[in-house]
Length: 208
Image (cartoon, rainbow, N blue to C red; front, top):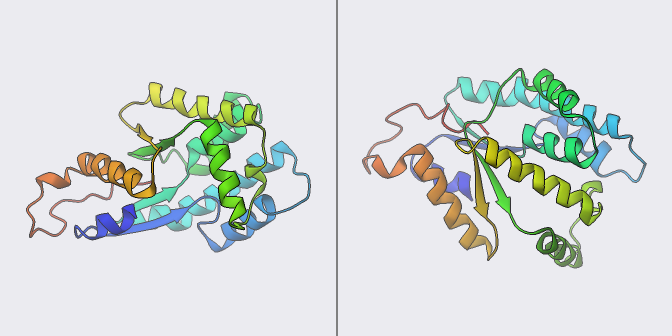
C-alpha cells in the first residue's frame, strides 16, 4: 500500500522483503521458516545473514544505483531483535554478522509497527483461523516476543531520526494513513509541485 501511494506521486518505487527477496532467498525462507525440523539458533542467524547478503548485493544495491526507492519488509533490525534479543546472541556477534551481510548499508528510514504482544498474538490467532500459512517465528512464547518488542523500542530510543514508531492499532486503512503521513514528511512530498515528476533524487531517502 505504501509503495502504491508513493508511485502515485511519480516516484520509482520497488517493494521487497526479507527473507525471500531473491530467488535464493525464497529457497532459504522455505528451508528455515517453513520447516518442521528443529533449527539451531546459530544456523538461523547465519541463514538470515546469507539471505540478506544476497538481497543487498543483487537486489537493493542495483535498485539504489538506478535511482529507485526500495521498501523492504524487514531488514537488519529484525536480526538484532529476533536473533539477538530473542535467541540470546551477544550484541557484538549479531552486529558483526549484520555488518558482514550488509556491508554497512543502512536504511534512511525504518518504520516499526508497534502493538502490544497480547494484541499481536490475538491477531495471529485470527489469521490462523483463516487458514493462513504459519512459519516457525509465529510459534514462539510471549516472553520471546516481549524481548523482541523491547529491543525494537530500544532501537527507536537510540536512533530517533531513522527509526520511527507507527501506532499499529486499528484497521489497515488507519495504519496506512499514518504511514503515508510519516513517509511523506520524510520525503517532503507535500512540498513538491503537483505536476513535477521526480524533481530530486530520492534514491537515498528511503532505501529499506
